[in-house]
Image (cartoon, rainbow, N blue to C red; front, side, top):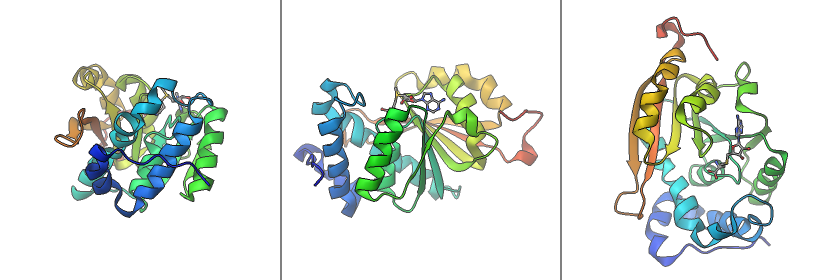
Length: 230
Ligand SMILES: C[S@@+](CC[C@H](N)C(=O)[O-])C[C@H]1O[C@@H](n2cnc3c(N)ncnc32)[C@H](O)[C@@H]1O
């Protein structure tokens, strides 16, 4: 039996809103992470006490950003999470939005072993790929590409935008530096067909620190001007 970490009472309401009848599943994932994460080098020991608010719900709020993309009529069938590490946000999103086809792209074997175990244990049906994102540019593309705590936006855009399908969206989870990072990344975004960069905030009034997400659209190939791919 997998260990279970029950959602703290003060966070039950947003957790129920975001996970619905899959709340028990995310409680099992959080339990696994609390039990094995520090020992396996997936999370720092001090993170165990703040796993729910700082990590699990912080990532689950990305589902609101995905719903926004979908409501705007853009594609959201396939999602790749680059640099998933312990499974953040990829596993959390696979639990919260089971209709998505989720691929986790992670370069460290120790971490893909963990992600494979979680996938099997919780029956999530994800694809786990051990690779650097850049190695997949020629072969793979996704409606949505997500990343959290992987790199500054200019570098992250080089790694991830070539994986975003034409008309798809990059969703980069960021902190207070999001605006500056967008400015600095502007030339790279332009070169790679990234447009309409904007910041979305999710969880206001529900959690202490809302989730900040940078949205970047990838323009369809036909309207991209002079940008070389990759
Ligand atoms: C700081 S951790 C963040 C993990 C997780 N996203 C989180 O928020 O807890 C960064 C992760 O990205 C992975 N990574 C770094 N560069 C990568 C790349 N180019 N392609 C795929 N994974 C990468 C690292 O191995 C590491 O697991």
